[in-house]
Image (tube, rainbow, N blue to C red; front, side, top):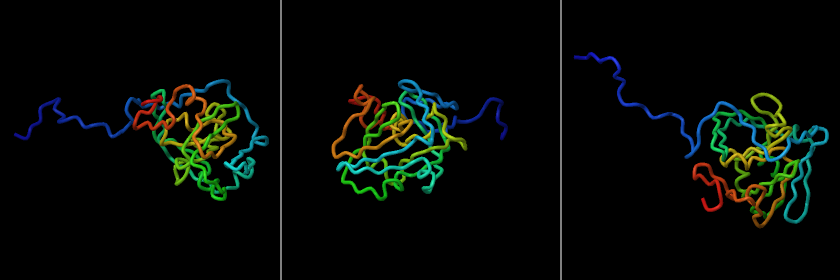
Length: 199
């Protein structure tokens, strides 16, 4: 009695890692882009937020760095089915950036250097859910990952985290972006597997 035979390990424990349905875990950071990689010198970079009334707010690279930053550690999920856990970033919360922007908009259309666009509900950019990031894993954000600056919205599929961020248009009506016009889901919740229109 009390002797456990070799090979007996009891009931297999479920993995501690929880992934959205259909996703697999990767340690790499795959690079997926639609088109060539823009190279934007930081002295030429600027971000413009345009409200539904046409009022513009602008930040240069230096002005962005002067804003209080955060270091979010988040999981990211790509619609091509890879997930990467515990990624480390540094950037400015959208709550800080939009604090003094007067708007009645419900939607945002984000645009990139290179012409890419993607749409999001404005509420998904606020309340600590989204950042404008310029460092990844302690280093300047590489161009292939969206440097010098990209959007980070980790609770949605990663195509919503637009690389090479240039502008945010605040809109009263939703307007599909690049992939959404090609049939991808307007929202893109990985936990609900919203990959394509109708999912």
